[in-house]
Length: 127
Image (cartoon, rainbow, N blue to C red; front, side):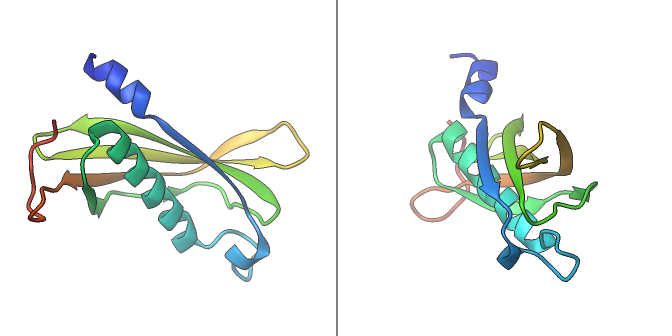
C-alpha cells in the first residue's frame, strides 16, 4: 500500500450534534469542547494510520473562524498531513451545518502532533 493510500484509508470523519450543555453564555460551542473533539478525532486518525499506541504531544495553531451555535451539527474531519520517524501530524477541520438547511461551512481548523509509543512508553518508529 502506498503512503497516499494509507493516508486516505485513515481519514476519519465524526459527526456530533451541538446541544446546550456544551455551549457558553453566547449559546455557541465552548472552545475547549471543540479542542477536545478535535484531539479525539486526531487521535483516532493517527491510530488508524499507524495501528500503534499514539499520544498527543502538541497542538499547533487552532483557528476559530466561525461560531458554532447550539442546535447545529458539526462534522470533524481528520487527515494525516506529515509523517516523521516516530511522529505524525493530523489536521482536523470542523464544519458546521444547520440541522434543517443544506448549508455547510468550515468553522475551526488545527493540527495535532502525535508520537508512537512502545510497550515501555518510549517513542518508537512508526511502521
